[in-house]
Length: 196
Image (cartoon, rainbow, N blue to C red; front, side):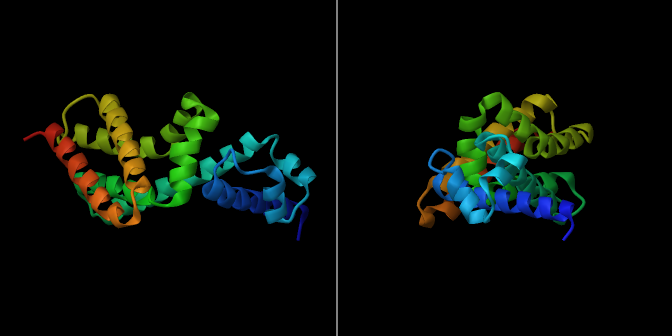
């Protein structure tokens, strides 16, 4: 294995270990020695790749955001050529992804707490909110939706984050019902902006 491949493998092991630990116990309850032990690397290797626990968390958050964004894009593309159907499919995919403990804990709970609202928002803007904004802009340009694109994106993004937390924190037997209720309400909200 080349030095670069070894470096990449070490970084991947650290991010994978940290992701599992942060999702299971949360940022505050996870120690760097646990992560290093799980990754089977030295503490020096950790600090070679990440300057702090927070920096490692940012890498984990970024990966989680990218994973969810890819799921949303995939669902939207699978919905067919209609931009309205794509938007609804993407919204549902985001809500479904939120039932994953990693997404809930890392993206929606610890992300804003660890990084602060402004930094967390930048990650959200670069991934989920960006795709949402693009979908809303397309529908607005097509004359399907009315209203300000930025305001609609922010309001819908906030509503979806809250719905995701509500659904994910519910007892297991209520999650599907909550997800369906959230999706029905989001659809009704969007229908209110739909040009007739």
